[in-house]
Amino acid sequence: MTPTPERLVIATRESRLALWQAQHVRSLLQALYPACRIELLGMTTRGDQILDRPLARVGGKGLFVKELETALLDGRADLAVHSMKDVPMELAPEFALVATGKREVPLDAFVSNRYASLDELPPGSVVGTSSLRREAQLRAQYPYLAVSSLRGNLDTRLRKLDEGQYDAIILAAAGLVRLGLQERIRATLPIEVSLPAPGQGALGIEALGCRPEVAAWLSPLNDAVTAACVRAERAFSRALAGSCEVPLGAYAEVEGGLLRLRGLVATPDGSRVVRAEISGPVSDPEGLGQALAKLLRAQGAEEILAALT
Image (cartoon, rainbow, N blue to C red; front, side, top):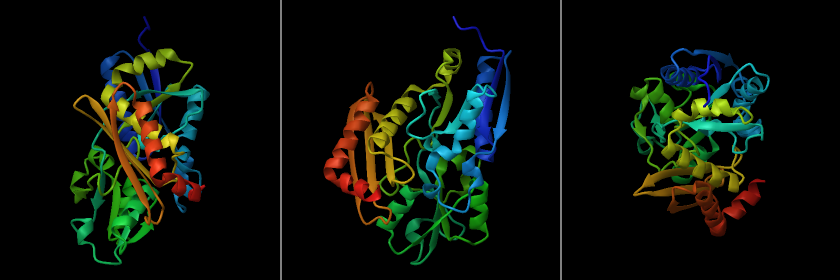
């Protein structure tokens, strides 16, 4: 039997949302291990520092986790807390995702001070987003809108909207809910309008693969349904070489004992969108993700991906 931990250090980014997430995990662990001393190690990542260029041009999702993983490797931290949508689809072999927390609302949110929905925006309205996935889906369905890059943490993005730099912005609803900013959400975008990113709304906990005791301590925090859904979404993305450079969405949910997985791949300008869905056993989420990727390739995703690489 693994002895209970005496001290745990959680590596986290220092944005308000990242700190909320780390503090949330700390409170759950404190309830499990009341005698344990649990500390936060706040860090600034390259993704937080590079704010003048779209993520797709400077290295993608790994920019938000590299420094945290370095802290795990050199022993300064025992675990790292991430938004699962920011975790690269391929982890280096020395790392493991040891727990996936229960999912918050997975949808994208429409935020505006003047308009109640995307449909209300007049032609030429400027919509801000940091995501190629959102941009492609917006361009496909609202070609008369002007989509503009929006970087920075959640508070920075809201400030830019409030300063009038954008008519509306699209954010992950989960972050707004977690920070108590639900009132900023004018509408959540249906999956048919904006299919979420793989892992959106879920928290992931990463540790070194060579530390099974950490995995054991964290296992009570794992939500089996969320974990299966996220594994399917990430397998789909991996099978299509999904990264920030590919406009790709995926969302899985458990319905009637089956895992239902929806996915799409698009050109950045939204001129082509290929989407499909598949259902299968919850026990094989990776197989389901790979099967959906194969289905999309057969429907034309291959040509889209070839043009992007």
